[in-house]
Length: 212
Length: 294
Image (cartoon, rainbow over all chains, first blue to last red; front, side):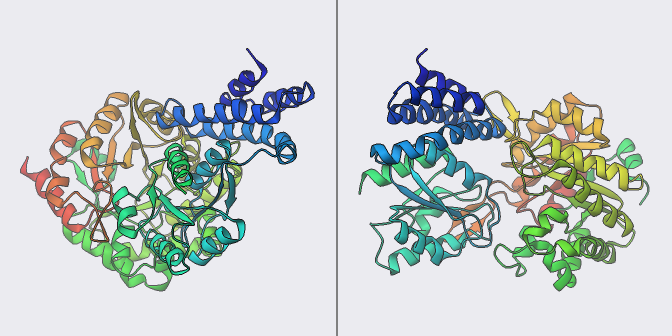
């Protein structure tokens, strides 16, 4: 087993200490940071995301794998910035105003980082203007909104409307998700995409970024 | 009303109430606001919802305390009001039902993941559930209903609190499962047999499931609970997953569709049948007539 596939395997198992050791050793041995990121961390997290989507593993396993991913990412990020590795894009995420649920939103953040995106996480209870301000300031091309409550879903429409009002539609794409949210609802409010779960959020966001 | 557990032993099936949050939204609960705030600001609305369910035939009417644990109330800035939020909610239901129905003290998740997966300290979570349960007990609930749990550890902490501070009142505990290729699991990975065993071990008298993705799926969940334990089973499905129609959220299962699951649930040996999100007094009325049609 190569060291990068060993990193991916240990990430899948949630072995954060082992991932940290392996990434450190690989960097010392001169393995390019980009390979460690893409074939180690990103590859491992992709497997975890797919296994969770199929419910072969559950939320605790994903959270342990995420911790292992961050253990590796903390070591890699300073090197990646220096090595000029382009990020997959910048995404602003948050749970919409009035919504204090963040587990699903955090999961999307984990998967996005694991897929090489830069993530600006605004937390929960985020008012529409903050989404749009943060996206404009960070140069993000996508705003991802989460809602777990049927009462807070309408806020998503306000965010989409604000993006259009500021003339940013087409520059900043919007994607929505969360338990009560559906593809119909996304279409209805004029969002650019809907994601059923965290793994499909990554796929949809990749597609949104690609068509720019 | 006599003791609930005696009634369950001798039958017939007990009909519970329906959703509370969705009823409160229809009465002006602000988007994203904590339903528990209404107990303090508009107790007449809480009492009205309880009365509507009671008049529809519900024999168990639930308190508006799903988010009434201190950790959950903290998110709404109501942590200091734990006692009042829970006591006043019980009083509102009691005013509506008198001694004509059992008052069920609802206890939902804290909304935080327990360590090591999240930040919540299990000791603090347990302490919070004890505070909530003690307030519900002091105000005179007839039973506790720990509900919508996905984390078995959090669920057992709540059950243990209801056992310890609940004055010997019956404790029901229900979790939310999703269908997977390998059977039903909570998002945290708990199976139906695991849930039944651990909840009873922690002190639950009644176990089962609530919320979920529709009443038809719930019938299968009920069968599996029945197979997993001899304890009484409680099932409260929501009225399907909400859909958007012309920009308005609707739950797809009408009272008639919802009531079609009553006979199969009774045949599966379920002791208590109620509703969750999206169900209304009309759903309860339909369940009552389906249950008595035999």
